[in-house]
Image (cartoon, rainbow, N blue to C red; front, side):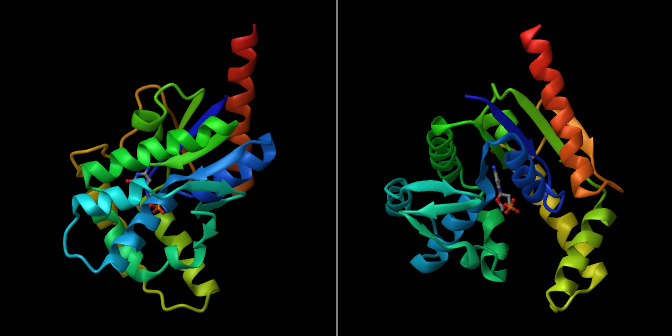
Amino acid sequence: MIYIAIDGPAGSGKSSVASGLARKLGFRHLNTGNIYRMVALLWLRSNQPDFSQDFFEMIKAKHFSVVDDAILMDGEIHEDDLRTLEVGKVVSKVAEIPEIREIITDKSREIVKSGNFVVEGRDIGTVVLPDAFLKIFLTASVEERAKRRYRELVSKNLEANFEDIIDEIRQRDSIDSSREVAPLKPAADAVLVLTDGLSLEEVIEKIYVLYTERMKSVKD
Ligand code: DC
């Protein structure tokens, strides 16, 4: 199997890039952030203040799979429930729990056994798939990421305050990169791709070229 790992901070454009790249290569796409979001949703629904052994067992018993860009849990799509403000607020906390990271890492490795995958997240190149064929660390300046988020909210007719968005992104970055387990950081052998000023197509093309060059060097 061939795996391409795409890691990077929130708002760096990972999902659109991973999805487009997977389509271009005929690979499947796994967005591990959506599994973290699904677990956050389960935790909210459990109405428990803490994470118990029972909760960990409940997640372990769930079956996760992928169809196109979506994650299925026990055969059902919950896509709309994963992007809510409530889930967004607690997901970083859920992602800090070592037992949960271990379960999601195992589930992710299980899913990708079924084919060639573009896998996106925060710790794919460092923890989940350290032997991935190609590792990309996607970055963009805080201002660029805030601009994209602002445009996205405005296009959906949602309330948007640029300064608030910048604060939120800085806060999320700091939680994601300072946590003890699997902090957000590029793998030593990752290629850093800065997306400031590049269109989605340009970023996909850049990674596609890296992939074909690597493929060629392996074959030579
Ligand atoms: O990519 P996203 O913003 O939907 O991810 C949601 C949260 O899950 C975010 O706080 C980071 C966390 N996450 C993680 O810790 N490890 C991953 N491999 C993927 C996501």
